[in-house]
Amino acid sequence: MSDLVIFDLDGVLVDTQDAENGALAYLGGLMGLTIGEGAAAELFSGRKMQECIDLMADMAGCAPPDGAMSIVRARCEELIGPSLEPVDGVADALARIPAPKCVASNSPREIIERRLRGAGVLHHFGGGIYSAYDVGAWKPDPRLFLWAASECGADASGCVVIEDSPVGVDAALEAGMRVLQFTPDPSAGPHREGVPTFSSMRRLPELLRAPAPFTPVTARDGGIR
Image 1 (tube, rainbow, N blue to C red):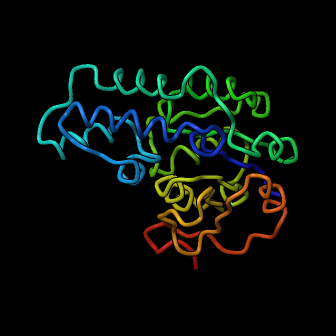
Image 2: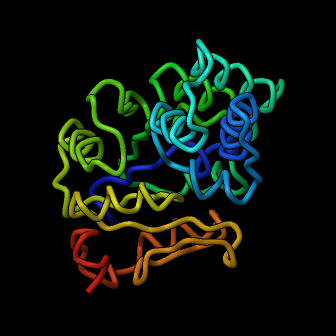
């Protein structure tokens, strides 16, 4: 069993990634861009929100509207609606994983806590909530994961990161951590070659008990050897 299991938030613990992508695509529409669901997932998933807004500004050749980030966050909350569900199987998996657990996300801390609370899984993490905004480093920068591990008293080599986005996977590999990529739709991509994937959260406890099947290396070196 791992020394520490580090979870991403959106798309791994709570089902909000589509809403966030849709909210960003909505902002793109205000800027004259048409961004479909597939393109939104490829462009935005796992990235810092400001980076996504800057990317759309480059694509549109114009500045974003005033208060762009507030527009996206408000639209995202509209798309999420009054209830928030955990990813299917997450509550059961968290209850069956005895190793220490934490969350490390590109989202602000208050959003992380609110979404975990709304999904009924906040109690599994105690005080182990780590936001990129607090450390000033956003995935794919590995410093968020390294900071979370340090705060939890774990060595990077003993950590397993649960991610769904390519930028999160790259951050984990750069940090020298084992990573498992959650892919609810195995036919969807992209996936980094050699990184184990799984499509059901109910399998996660057994995957964490299995010996590590690979040695993590940096993303620049090609992922896994």
